[in-house]
Amino acid sequence: MADKSFLNWPFFEDRHRVLAERLEAWCAKNLPVDHHNVDAACRELVAKLGKDGWLKPTAVDSENPAPLDVRTLCITRETLARHDGLADFAFAMQGLGTGALSLFGTPGQQRNWLGKTRSGEAISAFALSEPRSGSDVANMEMTATRDGDSYVLSGEKTWISNGGIADLYVVFARTGEAPGAKGLSAFIVPGDVKGLTIAERLEVIAPHPLARLSFDGVRLPASALIGKPGDGFRIAMSVLDVFRSTVGAAALGFARRALDESISRVAERKLFGAPMAELQMVQGHIADMALDVDAAALLVYRAAWTKDMGAPRVTREAAMAKLFATDKAQEVIDKAVQLHGGDGVRKGHIVESLYREIRALRIYEGASDVQKVVIARQVMGAG
Image 1 (spheres, rainbow, N blue to C red):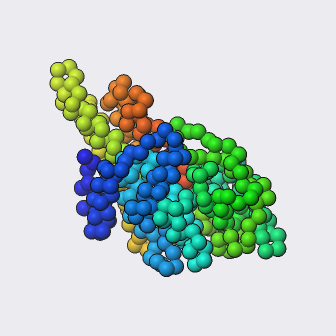
Image 2 (tube, one colour):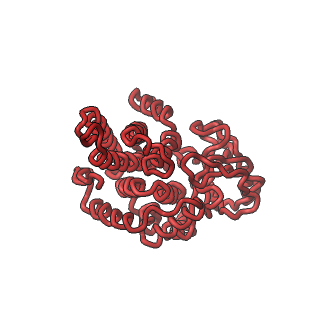
Image 3 (spheres, rainbow, N blue to C red):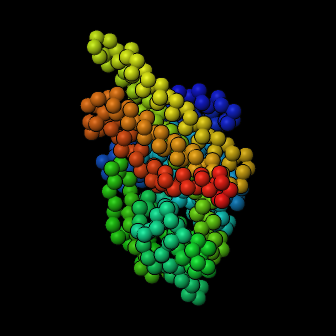
């Protein structure tokens, strides 16, 4: 059983503790799902999460103007990740994919989509990365050209989560109001629009629906623009500012599961005639793992609490939370593999699955190296 004492920290309110307890019971009943068909599993998870009300916190609109509650998002991601990495993925993408609409969409745009994504009727995606511009968003090449009352999108996006199964893509493209970051805009793109094709499905070590998308003269009404022309970079960074902390929370969930599995393993497994838990070297590993988990939790929930308390930006806090939590979760899970011996690398074992799941979190939504640059600039006053 995972340690829940962190819920007594002053970062949380009673509603967060109630949420954690209810979600834990739901996860025990519904997770994990069968992962053999990843697309089908994600559709099932989104539908199930939506039907049971767990997707409601992923989006807000003009009819429910309260800001996104980042602590709720983080607790949910941590809990889901501890039970099933694909469930965490399904939940997270409903929030990230619609974040631009929650924060910058018009009431009409929000009415058209957010009810569907929160109920699990529609799957969302966030299309930012390109073949030659991942973390370097300002170097984006995809274009959106104004043509009367329309915009015409041309180019490619890649590593797009939910690519191929999404009903809604929020797509960023160059509209050219100014060079670099100041010339980007954000658009609502329905998944079935003419000219949008799945150029390639991408397979990774922890299977998720990912794709390279091709936009061949995709024509959209001007009403598909989110915010103003040239606002795209600000919109993307604002969305990431909210959701980056939640990546750390997912990593924290993976790390907690690895620690739980390791504690059970060393208590049950005997070595040299005694439980492994009696060996000082093993105790040292467990202590290091517990320390990293608690330190990561403090950074994650500090960032979430700071945002929830009204801070306009938490760039520094969110970058620290994501960097530390994902890097340390990798170390915690590696120790878990070591403590499990051969079982730790046996395909299908939970620790082996965690080892594959954690690696991508140190890359997406800003790689660890980029987070170091962000933190340094913030600390030195250049960010």
